[in-house]
Amino acid sequence: MKILILEDAAAAAERAAEIIAAQVTAKPGSVLGLATGGTMEAVYERLIALHRAGSASFAGASSFNLDEYVGLAGDHPCSYRRYMAEKLFDQIDIAPGAAHLPMGEAADPEAEAARYEAAIVAAGDIDLQLLGLGLNGHIGFNEPTSSLTSITRLKTLERSTREANSRYFPDGDEPPRLAITMGIGTIMRAREVLLVATGAAKARAVAQVIEGPVSARWPGSVLQMHRHATLVLDRAAASELELIDYYLDVHPE
Ligand code: PGA
View (tube, rainbow, N blue to C red):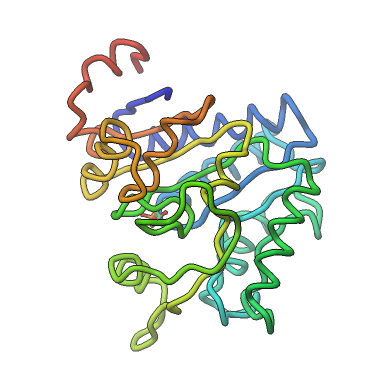
């Protein structure tokens, strides 16, 4: 794993955006794996700025998002489809129809999960998969005890995940209990993965993922088995790493 520790969250977001821009520049037809959440908002702001400066075009790229809530149509204000439209797709030049998310409102969510997995395979799998990290160590919505070889399927969200995400839901509404998520096996097939975690609240999960045992208890720890994983952290998220001095020595920022 390549562990990059940046001074603060803004610098981490900037670095992550630069890595994505470099990917689409080197390979304009890249298949990107995209993520949602608070951490990604800053990454996408920086990516839009790079696009506007002429440093990143998505005209030839396609994308697959990690996950979507079951039961929310794409035009629902709390759907990830809407999040992605507002925070990224409407502000860059990705072709309409090239940006994919699971259809949360599908009548048969299990069939939709299978269709989505097949679409990723048909696209030749993902070149660069962007990942956030849950407080419980989840990647995508692969909650603790997810099979480390799972493919796209339905998952029941853990309480800490629903609490963390309730900030996106208007007063009184709760996040759905179920989501369609790429599996850990799906994510591991990506040729490169880029995980971004910032803030002190993530420090425990970050330490488990990087320095703990590979375990379904902390699903992100599976990235220790990936050949090309980059983890971009800020100082706060890196604060519980035992070997922090080593990581800073290898990649001084
Ligand atoms: P966050 O979510 O960026 O909102 O903390 C990350 C995640 O749950 O994957």
